Image 1 (cartoon, rainbow, N blue to C red):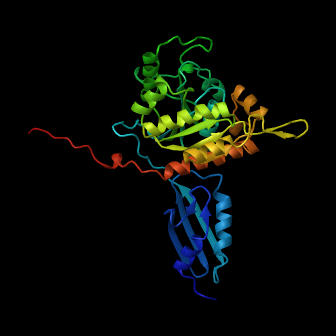
Image 2: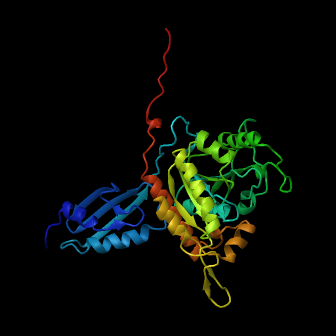
Length: 363
């Protein structure tokens, strides 16, 4: 039996291109340790994003590759993750207790942005991350209904708010503080101030990703977010329809102008499959999200069907990822979550926490 060299293992691992990082794990510096003991090989892989739903598939594929090496008998693949803070806009301070903020935006209403936001948050949590969700739609908050929460947040110190929890998600919304039927008749400055308070006065607890569900458009709230909130990256939600794409492009360009990286585009209501006969139909057109992604040089993160179960679940406070965790739709959301987090993991890291505060004292 031939002796197995560590270099052989490394070269074999380079033949596998990770679908989320778009490069091999050695080049991506995800391979942290390789141990060879006779015919036994152990590989430690640490991702910069959560991969709970991908571990088994990855382990099986890498095991098959390594067992093709002469002399390798047993393979052990250890997969874990460690989420780091990543750089944000210049001159904007990080939020205590939050590593990364992902804004979910759309140019227009009715494209399923809030549904995407809550399922993205739940999918990241299912993948192994600690997740928060901020409902930034002051005029039309929908996350309390979607998360099935109807109580008010508590304040232990009379100054800050404790986030409300359901499905292992920390959340905050103006909808928790007012009656569901009460309209918010506020002008722009009041709305932006409320958003800042909800974000900064909430005691987020060791959150890897804070998802911000933005209202549609490119107005006061979006500009406040882009200028005063430390956003790590943005995701644009659209439907394939031309009129939705037109507005989605405006949202994308707004983030580019304020130097917030756009992590990609999610196409919602991509295809409808009849529950009675199984006929598939592109009600809102086809290929729109893909064209927009290509034109804007960003990734198409995924496409979701027009499925009645998605709507029913969110209306009942049980979004798809928790209502049917093994279903096709939940699988799509989890794949999108891995792609979003992987894109973010490749951005510049924020090292500010590693530097001590310098205090000058007069003796």
